[in-house]
Image (tube, rainbow, N blue to C red):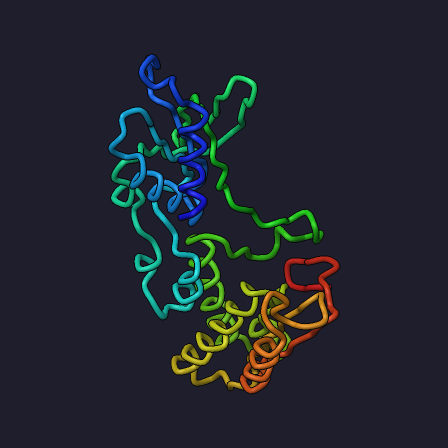
Length: 270
């Protein structure tokens, strides 16, 4: 909220005395429909929405807002996927919304180039630009990352859930012990907040799945968490990290610290 007020104050200062003679409103373009972009749009809309001197536009790749903390529960089936997403448009009462992917920004001419999923091209002019595009998974760091599943959006959550169920199905029908063992081995690379919460949901999800697969014994499921650093949850206090580690040990999770992934193959992690 304080950032929003500072931003509005800077707008007022930058354009003081120019409103009455301006032939068009002052254009504020916000890129990104995640927490940063949506909440910036909502707050600026509340502060400036009734002022016709301003025009606020939000550009987002998706026309829905994803509540990221709920993505883990959606992947494991604890909640429905539609409980983790909301349409963006009803959230923005005073903001124009453009459903498009950003291609480039021309800072000299103050324009944003974007395109829709259907291939339509857009050029959006701005007076002030807010960047809230978030981050993408870095697949260049570890060779073979294309063979691993990511975990950033709704489709990733669905894919992870389906892959786990598929692994149980294959293991249930498999007669070869080694192949059966491989099908029931799940590796999560990264012991930060995302990796730890995902592993926590996997332990519960696999436990629930066992009810439908009487031929699979609990001890056959192997869950491995790899963390390059000295401990899991480096973002959190050491006491909380130790608590999480103890809980994982009770659930049979193998935690390997000081272990990074050198490369990934279709059925193997080095």
